[in-house]
Length: 185
Image (cartoon, rainbow, N blue to C red; front, side, top):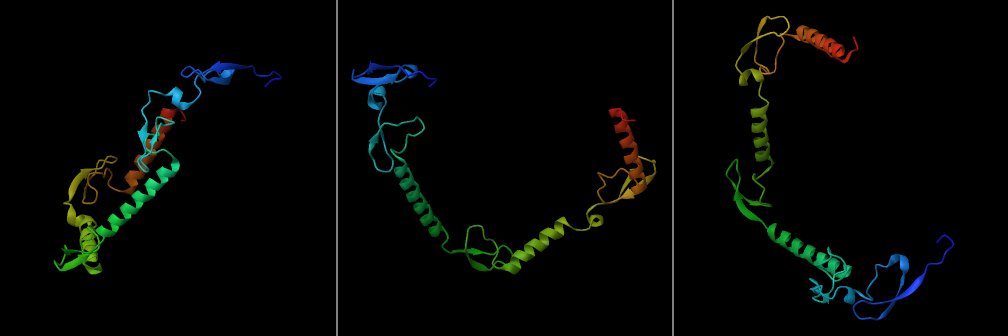
């Protein structure tokens, strides 16, 4: 403390007038106890044990101690586990593919076996990954580089060039334009 002794002075509690010792630099202590400092603060009831307590912090308004909080959390976890076990009991439902009745293990189960699930995946993939020529009609587009007309069915909305040669040429030109804009060329 820089070679100096802290001055200690006797103070009295503002509420009950009992004596207390406080370092003069930290004069913030004006009361002898929490009960004197917060007389108007309402005492709360602990959710676990039911005991009345005055909260130490604004945020801790539910439990009187950490032990009560941990006990409450473990009791809640046990209740949740019991509910999950109750929900997992078999349910009767029908398969979405073949219509066969089954004991569903969860509410999310839609298919009776692996074969039905594979059939759904096969149908889905056939819909999304069918050849592009079957999905789209041919479209006539003018090449942005050479101006020639060409017909395409694959990614017609994104195609700009008639082939790789025109695409590479356009890429080189745009690269030069970017360099010029940055002052490199």
